[in-house]
Length: 297
Image (cartoon, rainbow, N blue to C red; front, side):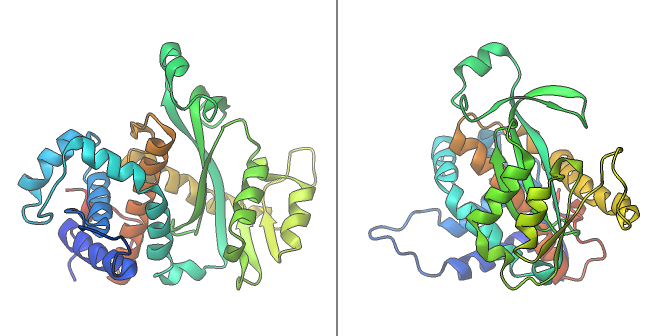
């Protein structure tokens, strides 16, 4: 099977349409189905068109016949924001359809998602109270926005994620995410989670140990190193490369969201695109699981 954007979109549409089944809504069906909406959203991210208005002009010329009906910019925006719960479920459904879903090693980290720069924008933003100011040590800069907390496999397949105020402790967010979705830890004996120094906590270690999970992270300089710490350096680079894919190829920080629903939907849109590419690459036996090169043109 060839790996190009049309093949991926066709396979993804069929997968999502089969997963959704017959719609439960009563009345006239929408001209753009939910499966078509999610496929359209993934195509937009993979082809790197950030403007929704430009994207809807782009589709008929570059993907002729792929989508029989296209809404206006306002309608597409409203549908996409309202589809945030559906996007989250679709990420899980596509991810669970790969052999990577049962991987016994997880990587966890957080990365900044900037939402505004100027002070006037911050004051009038609908994200006030959710977003906030924080300092990113890895990028040596202050930002106003959120943090994306991502749990993924070493191949980059998203397991679960959360957007949170950047002032919140990473350890608290990890605990909250796993408590919110306890089924993730079920049927995963001897799960290993690899993290950075921000997750150092005896309390977190005990909490995870009670659930049969081991957390591996570097020790502080004034602590005795663990015997297996030398294994961390190459593995820690994997989560950094996943974040680089999200930011460099999928424009994570150029999401353009201005509301809670808007930011959430656009981040989920990018995570679904990453999941879909990994799913398709795995199904077609590609040598590089997280490569997006075949789908960006």
